[in-house]
Length: 284
Image: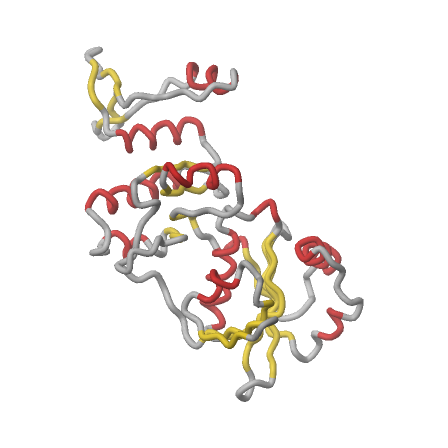
């Protein structure tokens, strides 16, 4: 353990053995023990050690385990996604979180600020660890640095590579759009949200409901970005801009429970219609 320029304790990680273990296909187990400047062994804070190792290795995802499987709201429901830095002030003072959990939120924020933009962190449980590692569907609390700078909003097709957008939609829905789809948007298009890499998009139209209501016509995220919080970032951007909107979905669509949060809906046997009356946010 060294000290930084401000004479604060600083955990310096020697990565050679860690990298050798990883290159050999082995998972290293690290005890939170280090040596100070005098060569004496000292017990270190395990969360700070995690932060130091993450800073040194620059991983794609950092995972923390707890017994509750994530951060929980006052109703004991797991908070699925935390967008930083927007949600930090709220969580830092949330009465539903313990002091240790609030410290962990602060530490995770520091970790992600030192990692690539595509990196994320998650708090989950040992029981759900495998699903976090090997599937797109997480079960804990995902932390992601939210930047809307990578999302562009268009009011027309001008400036959009329509063929790339079409390829994204066709691949995501596994079917081909009608040839006149983009022509049909004329006079109805309200906004197109599109990521810089054409891996996430949403198309909003204006429909003659209640004197004119935004309609979520398309919402797509490529498989390469699923599980990285891109869906939530895109959804937050839409919600922030539009305030209210409605959309239709097949009743069996697995994404419905995620989108229904804070909405009203009418459900039939084949189709569900959902509308959002007002904005909402994480409440603790």
